[in-house]
Image 1 (cartoon, one colour):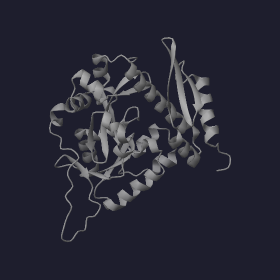
Image 2 (cartoon, one colour):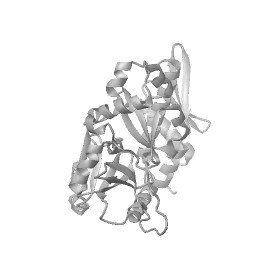
Image 3 (cartoon, helix red, strand yellow):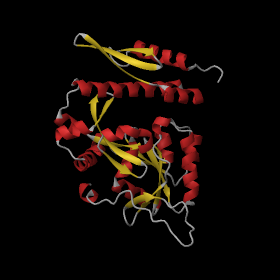
Image 4 (cartoon, one colour):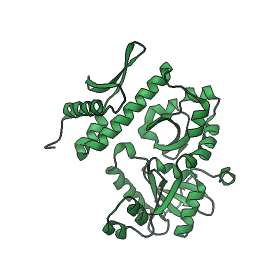
Length: 313
């Protein structure tokens, strides 16, 4: 589109911004072979890592939002550097420090792709639970199979530890849509127009807050506020939207979710599936978007049945 940078101009600007603001410490960014690379001087030798920014550029080309694309590239580069340091032993893996900041996040399984093979994770519909810890300020580390093995942690052990810890590291927040818009500085016209029967479930930092849907007691609170079963709309990795299950047909909400995802930043996409929380059974499962059936009715298996959750509250 007119006025927007081409791929090479985009990459050069990213490099310039990173180096000017020292966004990655003393590391130096460069653009080489259609990749943005970061080079560090360690122990008398230069080491580098890099990534292909095509996905972020495609987002920028479609929306013109350089700030968001730039932020995502920085985060991806930080992750790449962290993974490299882990391999060469630069990051100290202190068991106590990891346990203190251990938490889980929800990601889109398909988009995360092959990297899940190298990480302990738990499938949850078309999403996956992954495990993280705070490496440093604004740097999140992912628990790899190698780290889990070295610490003697099974995936079940990680889930239980992260379940206890996540809401302490970043407590949950359940707000009406109107209140949430006010907290985020929304205009009065926006907050007044917010649906009265829509709630937002996230965390206090509004970052990676969709994981709060893993807590049965938070969904139970939403069900109490909304008067029964709840449609859980995984609107992004940062939050879920909650509405009464009886307010409209599931197929309409499913279509709305997929329309929303078409305009969502790719890195924030969580799921194309509408879920329903059964308040009586305490089960979260894909919503039946085909309520009228004749001879056969598809049976949806719950994403989770909270077994140890009640005692963990």
